[in-house]
Image 1: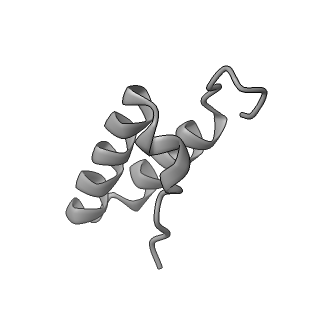
Image 2: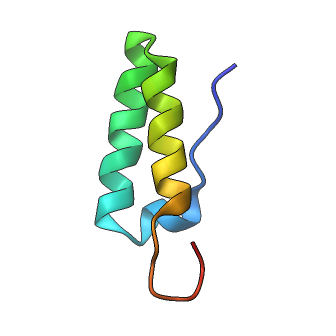
Length: 52
């Protein structure tokens, strides 16, 4: 079952917002591997506030 992207990082970062769009498009196509990759990249993207 697909998981939703965490919103806090996505709403404040253009790079993460782009990855979230790619994630939604991948899930719509049934490419769940790419969708997971996008979520991992969002989770790992540094935002300059000490969080990852």
